[in-house]
Length: 456
Image (cartoon, rainbow, N blue to C red):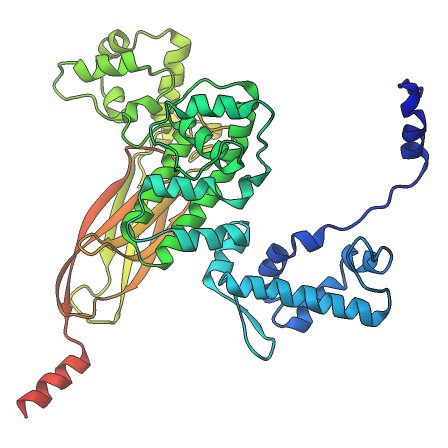
């Protein structure tokens, strides 16, 4: 091998080729998220466990070999031990302050809900802390979008030389104005701009498209984490808004756009023709396209055969879900007692018309705007829209048929309640379903005792 180079660089390159390069650990920069995961799995349950965990890492081997690099005061066992103790106390203190774990005076550590969410979705602890401190019962899609754009995961998004000017130009035409405190040399601003351009389906440069692809792939688990954090607070409307944002990310649309725009090759002109069609039924949903006569559909779409085949594939993959539910012992619900509810989801599909590959790929999302393959996910939610309370939630992957059991506590006050069951897609717009769930809550034992005491 012959390496040709500029003469002044020769000695530098020779040193790189022939001299061994020291490898150092950066684990100390990312220790918070490692510790959080180990706390959730109960591998670490005390300060001593955390110290023992570090002694099995490459970081521990390098501490005494290169003390200056790791800011050690010395290389003796005492110096290393003190350094590890300080490191562990700092990291666990930060996790405790962010409410990812609980640290007691005796040095015992236990996981909290935020830490479990972060570990489950592989989300940084700083992101979960930001979500928990930013969402409220009145947060809407715009607010959730801004929280998402500030997630620590997007700090790797570069703002290249000259991109600030381009971002300013793009920001002028965004549907939602950027917050006043955002600066165009920050990755969070770029992330928010690229999210909004994705929903508006704007044409971007190759560099922006590459960055946007990274953002979109990472956004799905982040939105799922946002939903879980919101649901732990019992807020219904913000949770539904976050679910709609997931649909927007996958399909590359605003939540108020026509659902027909999800279909490949459907332009604004085609959608206007469909909306202006004077048929027996208005064309508003994806299934309405399937129900049209062939000649009417061809006249409205005016697409070549290859593009019509893409339309057919999307429409056939578009989920048509039958939902049924049953409240266990619905005639015997007492105030404050657990209520069990069984929900059945079944995809309407004719298996005889599907080959083996189509059956194997059932439940895979069709989207021309999302840069990765994705499986359908569904949120099954029970809530009370009258007081914005979320009672129970579960996220499931549906292939053909699934049964889900939800449990929640009956209201403390006796009476008749009109709850709502939501079945929300995380990938498609226009296929969400909601059902009224009426329950009658009888007084509890305490109420009966109080009544009898008053009578005496």
